[in-house]
Image 1 (cartoon, rainbow, N blue to C red):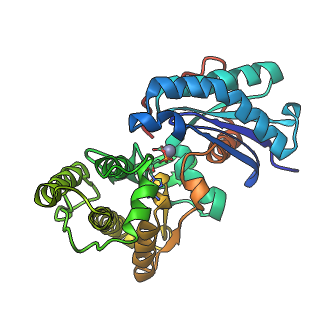
Image 2 (cartoon, protein in one colour):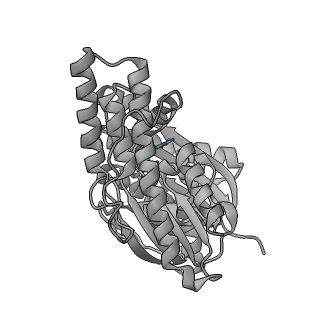
Length: 342
Ligand code: KG4
Ligand code: ZN
């Protein structure tokens, strides 16, 4: 008996994505980005994103089916991100999925975008439940104990901004393009992380909560101090600021991960994996620091390939397949939700 063929659709932020999976086998994984559309505005504009999703979601689905080499009629279920995210975009995806479900008579499955990220380590690495997960993206930052496809316990998280947002803000402050994460990482490669010592908020406090907004402000002040002193920023200054910022984020994530692991030390070997997910998990130095931490604490470290860390529809199809297996289906009343905590 073969696994069902699942079509996944994702449109909650600025990537229109569609994918076809059979079990854990990714037959296609199409991502149509919108970076160009938002470039002039220094960030994602919800109205523009919603319009682009509405225009591109059908194209993405057609492309995903074509690349997978399967006709729509062969699909067993349609999984779609139903939130959380920018509501216009989520609506475009949900409307498309409803249309396909109505036309084919196949089950419709609403998926929480965060569950998609949180289950990705099982899609790529077959990690057994339960495992610890650090979800770090542009809109989210939290430690979860993942106990099952729909069972998540939050251990702590950011009390203000998400790290991805801070990376994007840093890029804007230094006149680098968006999305900022990869740009800051690239620029930081030539930099000295020790030249500007930026704060590591909440590091002295117990628990797994984090804060990144103070770091953002400190970066702004440091940048302005350099500009006031020298009349502008050199490439060297930019690289050093990026490196200093990235080092601070890395230290915060690594130290709080160490605490999350320590929380469950008594429950080994039941819980012995730390996985990362979300766009910021694409960051090389952050992955390396977590890898080192895990090696030192006899913890299995799982970091999905970069293309499955950032927003994609393969993770939505996979999470949808898990829901289908548990017998869940949604009807035509499936709602798009701007907020939807795990
Ligand atoms: O998970 P994601 O694709 O979208 C959601 O926020 O749900 O994450 C996007 C975020 C952006 O803020 C982006 O700047 C950040 O992930 N990001 C990175 C890197 N690649 C993407 N941050 C740091 N380093 C990277 N290499
Ligand atoms: Zn995401």
